[in-house]
Length: 629
Image (cartoon, rainbow, N blue to C red; front, side, top):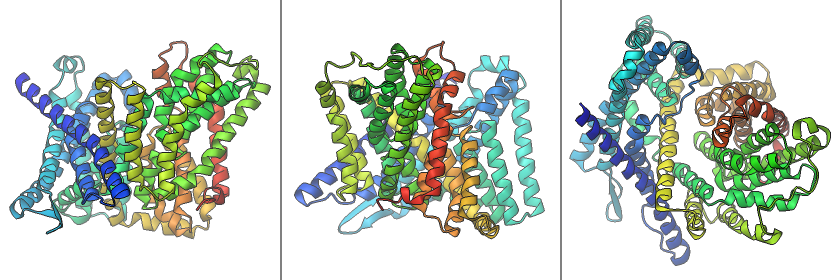
């Protein structure tokens, strides 16, 4: 058994390595296409098709490794509470989740296998004969291999760590009870021949229950979507085929490459110490104002957001840069960490934003339009934070700290040195956003150009070693597979919901209540904040948008404006307990026992209120988001 386990572990490591390198290679392929088209008027053929097929392969090559490493997104707040009270019950639930994950991925394998054989026998390809053809049999084989190995990774959990099983007896009984309850509910729904709407309502309740218990969100969406399709069609063969179609068709679009490319750019920016330079320059500008160091943190976060698009990266970077400096200059630790958590949300609002990209793909609206729409809201939120810092420094010294003007730090040797150090930041912003708004790049091409430029900056600044490069590539791959597999799963669930007719019924019902768009948005914002306390931002978008988008369309709302409101509303959850992802990132980055989670949550509360007020302002005045459109 140990030999088999070692061979299997080596297999998924090699598969993951191939996927990691493949993702990285897409950057150079797209950049070569840009260069050929722009400088020589000779674009490379079939680049969008190659990239689209590559995304499918990269996800399924790395899926088993992500499962084995526990990288699939989950909300484990309740599960952690259960584990503290009854370790055996928690372990039993983990086994149930592993069995569910293995079963649904085996169903995907079963659906993809005949498709692979058919493609192999017919030599199926995409493209135009005589111009270019791309065989798709290898991609279909990778889907089969990836789904099967990911299922085995889930099953390996059942035989792992025998010493833990002996300490937490009764785990199988809990797993058996959970499986029996799930099977009984499915059997009852089958025998009672529930209406389509009833199946949709049951599916929503079930998926929320599974997510609350701690099941990986992608598995909950995929499993419930599969079961719902089987119940709707009275044929689980059709549901199995749908899983295969979702696996191969959902992310096979060029635009989805924006996800790994912008993640890669953000990680290269993180290792380049650009965040530190942004803070240094902002400190030189604002440092001598009372509260200026706090304003510098907001300004640096704003600049950093414009080249990363990831809030968590901002929280991790500035917790190490800004917090120690502020504490040393007399700010209270509570205020320092709270401001860092609060201003980190700018990373998902100021373009380019990963959440805006995901929203644009789901809602099928222009990503460039979303970026333009987010500029003014991002500036408003950053300005509101900066003004609040100055006001609190003047009138609330007990919270901010007893600070005095003249906070200039020894971080830099001079103002001009600091400003010159920010030149790479300005160059990246001009390249990425200027390229998109100037019509030179598509968002995907801008991501590739930005990732390549960030790589060059990291190399020129000697911040990137070979091991560091591999770490960046591997992390990019794992973040990519986590997001894109979640999108595949959400697509399956959304297809099932659409067949039930529930979203359209909900849209008609809410429109008939006479609440209007403002009434709907009020309830929607509250729901975003509540879900943000237990779920991550991407999962909230994927779960809520299939239900909300038809309602907004029915009520006459602009989907680009609605996207900006949704993203800023979701970001409030990054600062609210019990999950508060930015708060946990800051806590782990600081590794300071004197700064508790409670202190970080308390320190960020004023900025939660400010973010909420700005969100309401954007809801009341849509023109603020649509100013440049």
